[in-house]
Length: 219
Image: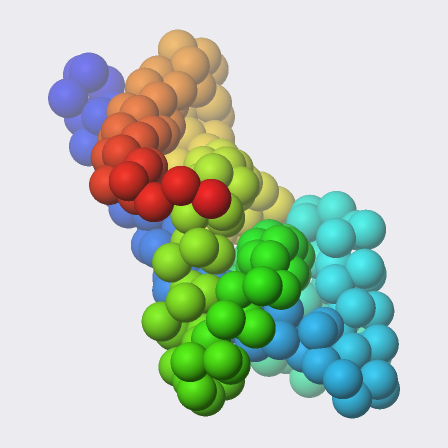
């Protein structure tokens, strides 16, 4: 196979990796915010439940969670929720979303609780509601505080998409294994690094730009 053919094949797999990455962010960021609010809730059963979920998800490997989402419904209930190529992708997406939502929730919780109480008190003195206080006073401070740890998690997510191959999702590593390793072609495995380096480099530049945009706001 020519270099161009190999590149095009790997690009097909990388499209799946990118789609898994993008959809995970779309769903895990808002879900993480919801979980963080639940963890900080004054309703103790809700707070304890959210913290328990976060503890379990953060304390177990993502690979194990992929297997659990894909295989456990069939093993316990005899129901195959995820079948076919699309089903495998959906199972991977569910596992990734819950995993990263829990990590993001802790980042959000730390950012929100890190805002000095004086900021809230000042907003109350000005007669702001809780909603106005959060969106007008707190939000930009939280964004500034969490940008660096969130960017680290996002970059980690790019590389973690390779774990989806464990349940036969046709991402870039799985394509390489099926198309090239089976033919004893080794070098495409290392060529994959170029795809990830370019993508991670673009994300690094983007988050660096975001940090510069927020640098006027000191906390």
